[in-house]
Amino acid sequence: MKENRIQSYLHKLQRHLWLRGLADAETLAEVESHLLESVESGLRQGLSVEDAEQRTLERFGSVKIVARTFEKERKDGMQKLLLALAVLMGLFIAYVDSRPTWDDTGITVGTMLLGSGLITLLGYRRPWLIALAIGLWTPLYETYLSRNFSLPGVILFPLVILLITSVGAYAGWAIHLGIRNTFHLA
Amino acid sequence: MIGEALKGHLDLLLLAILAEGPAHGYAIIESLRSRSGSTFDLPEGTIYPALHRLESQGLLRSRWSEDSARRKRIYQLTPKGQQVLAKRQEEWKKFSKAINATVGI
Image (tube, rainbow over all chains, first blue to last red; front, side, top):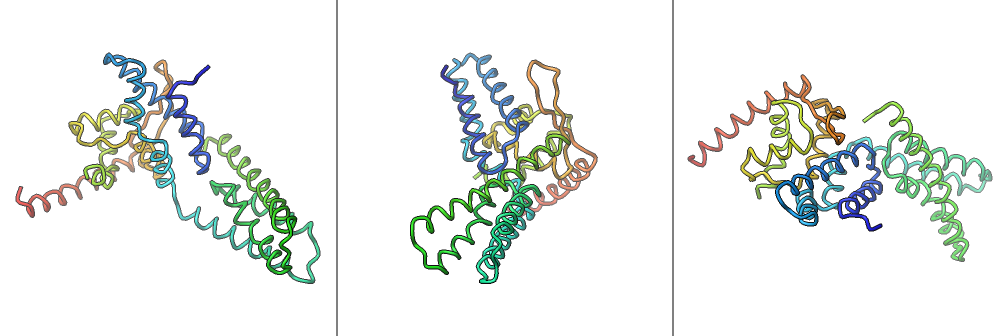
C-alpha cells in the first residue's frame, strides 16, 4: 500500500533525526499528532485531503529545516567534550599500538570497543561519528608507518577497525537509550 | 526579516502563551499565529525544538494527555518559567520603550 504524504514525511524526519542521534519515539509521536490535527483542521475548512496534507507540510517546514533546528537547540558543550575525548582516545590508542614494544592486539581491540561504547553510553548522539573518531587513527598511522598501500592495508584493515568501533559505539548508544526509556529521562 | 527577528524573542512568546494555561504544540502555534495576525508565521516544526529546550531548562513541564481521540503532549509553565517570563516581560518593556523613543513612534 502506498503511504500517504504525512507518513512519508514522518519517515524522512525520523531518518534525519536518527542520523543526528535525535530520534526518539516521543518527539515523532508529537510531530505525528500535530500533522494529523493540522490535516483534520484543513478538512474541516473544506480542503481536499491532498490540499490539506500539502498545506500542513508547507506550514510545518521541510524535514531538513526541522531536523536542523532540533539539532541546533540540543547542541551543548557536553557533546563537544565527548567528541574531543573520542578523538584523543583514538589518537592515544593509535600511538600505543604503533609502539614497537606493543604487541597486544586483544587489549587494543578491547580498548576501542569499550572506549567507543563508553562515549555513547555517556550520551554522545552520533555513534557513527564516535566510531570514526576512535577508529580512524590506528589504520591511518599503521598505513603511514608501514607504507603499506596494498588493498588489505588500505581497505580491509580500516574496515575491520571501524566495524569494531561501530559495534562498541552502537552498543553503548543502545544501552543509553534503554536506560533513558526505562527511567523516562528527557 | 520578521522570521529572523522573531527567533530572538520566541522563548518570550512561547512562555507568554503558556502563561494563559497549559496547551499542546498545535494550540500554541495556532495561538501564536492568531494573536499576531499571522505576522509570526515560523515553520511550525521549528517550535517543537524550542519547547523541548524550554522544558530541559526547567521553564516548562509536559505530560501526555489521553483525553481526546489522539494523544497530545501538553506543556505547562513551571514556577521557574513564571519567574523567567516576568523578568523577560520587564526587559521587553524597557527595550521596546527605548526603541519606540528612538525611532519616534
